[in-house]
Length: 70
Image (cartoon, rainbow, N blue to C red; front, side, top):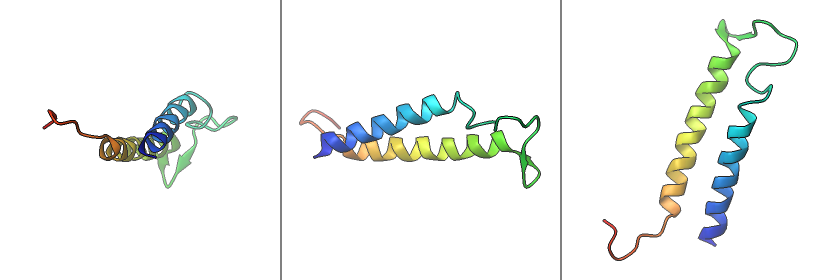
């Protein structure tokens, strides 16, 4: 069951990474999009950063420790 959860965290990470190179960061047709006076790309970058850290935390908790791991 843990392997399936680790696979899902890896899949989400890959999808997020690929999505960051699409028009998710900058909406199509807008030259200078802003949200609350801050550029839209900064907001999305902040959300992506938080999600990457959360995914890394989840993946590290799902890893099994061997007898020699500290």
